[in-house]
Length: 375
Image (cartoon, rainbow, N blue to C red; front, side, top):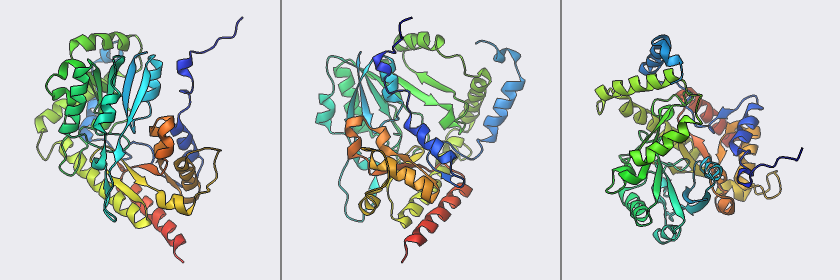
């Protein structure tokens, strides 16, 4: 029998850098995991009760119920392999940080797209544009002006926008999340993605949704019904009931969509202060679960950390930090295309959506590290 060869578009997508760091963390006895993006506190009681009701209620819920794609860097690392799996060709455009005054903290709002560079990425072969706001891993919330630029280019070149807005409720410091589908002329060419995992702090439920016009949704439904068979119907029912509950409390202090970002912002501020005390230089996020922090000072002081030939510095640093300092993070270079990784290998990503006990454990690790550096 002839040897079977997989399609070339699958080359390399079987490897996940995040899995490597999760495995490394599991091998250490005493680590604080700030790398993976999951809350380690309980979801709201109403969501759990809704799930319990869905499980024990209606028993029928247990039954069946090479185009070019522009991707903004840094990007959630599944976008590239998903594009390749679909037979598309990823085209990358990078957010770049603007200079800050010495001593002034950096912010995700300082990371901008170059309008000329962005426009140059659109061609007659461009079929889709992937937007992620708030952005993972940067925490950038795209402004109305930035979204209008993207919208105008999508309309000019007849491009579909796939907008990942799973962190839409996690926005801080008075910033506002805007759905690009709400802009003039964009509803008919936008698919907007949401996630119950992020919305209700239940990342293990794996329930999400897509909003868009029927002209696009009919094709998505065809793909979905022939590929997805593992989502528990009870989870879907629980999410629906949770949204019904939120509709009654929307905009009020009792709303989870009000309470969650307030709590998360306190966690963010706690982590920022703690990291700064150790010499890290966090980029203050406007939204999401994550912040990235500049490790250039460590790179200058410890340039020769062990690692494979050509391995980006941030990957070597994270492995060293897990083994020697008991703190888990994720290297930011994995969120960039291969040619651009070397330009962004001095950042690592932390998840601040953690219980207070986890943040206190982080404090202890950082203070011990700081004490070791004190002469």
